[in-house]
Length: 528
Ligand code: FCB
Image 1 (cartoon, rainbow, N blue to C red):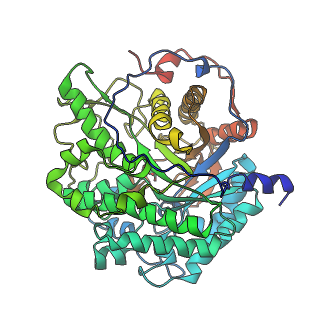
Image 2: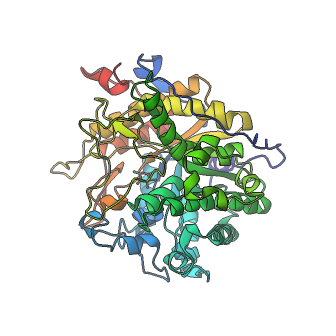
Image 3: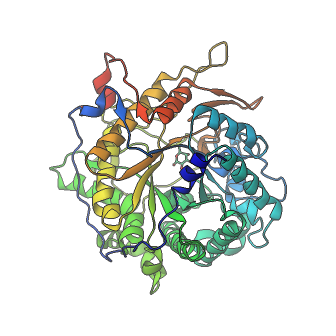
């Protein structure tokens, strides 16, 4: 490793003596903001990023590793869920996925070649502690090898401990995240991981998107373990937040200089008619049940009163024990922000709805415990192949809101840890994919990040979702998000046009000038 590489890798350590600002102990009400309609100075032309801005790519264990029953790994909830009739399109599972378990040296070399500086990956709890109790040294050894490979290539390992793949044994024997004990078992697993590779990994994310794990998993039933109970989803949400806090405490004690954080997913909920109190209330309920139910306990040390009121009948409060909020709001260093799109929300159903969920046959429910009578409306924005609206200005507003209300006052850095798009790629005769739509998607979102930085948001990095086409949960292999195409028959990787372009952006620390297109306006900002 060269000296420069070494100092780059170390620059993500935090100052162990820095005072860490405690959470204020107050939650916030919902304050809607208005969509931005003006094109900003960053909308065209070359846009440079601050020195040291981190350029990464992200994946998750179950989506890419494969080797699902090799070297001692046992079922996670996703291995079991994928087999339920009609749960996943074409009944596809992650048994082989992108086979990164065997192909990681080539994938790391590919990242190095592209110029990607950080790899956000997750470790599989069911590989490391397969039955939920005994540590599996062969499972740990995989991450040991992966981390060494990354460091050898000068790539920062950005480790996430949980991206939804709970060991099935914990689900089956102990009621999964509904059981408080799972939070303590997660802490033990975090310590096990840290004991094995904490000497080489400086950045630790506890959870990825606990909203999905709790509410798609236990209330809506669209994700593993596929339950449909509002009570269970709320219990799971609280225990996931508790697990995060317990892990931060344990990791901080072991490694005061580690960069610790969590990744949450966010949507910007705009009332369809800001002058209609019913629409504002519908947007408030979705914002509460999506963003504030996690952001406020974790970053402000309190549950929002309106959220507690909305879900009063489902028993959330009985799970909140004395001292939990202090644990949950243990200071962190970084907040990971996953953003794909926002919503126009109304109390009236739309004439035509934009359903972004996978068209599977297994019945599911509304994942929002307080979401009855709240509807999202299409806004005429361009959509990706998953019917997700392309709304870059929402990312600017989100980052500014987080900076002002949550992270700024506590000195927490923001990283966009996921952003990307599914498009139906068509490879040319040479296997190459000229995915100008994905390239433009990333381009406009990076410009939106720069807008937020210019207006004061402390955003220090961006991770494209995803490095590779991979297993897209209930969509199976049907949706491709990769910067790199994967041929699932041969496991061959082919860098897409967006991947080459993104690598150049990473190397230049700048988004290059782009030629004006006739439909430019509709891509950059929503129309008033
Ligand atoms: C996020 C997930 C990630 C991927 C993208 C498209 O919610 O964290 O695993 O599925 O969506």
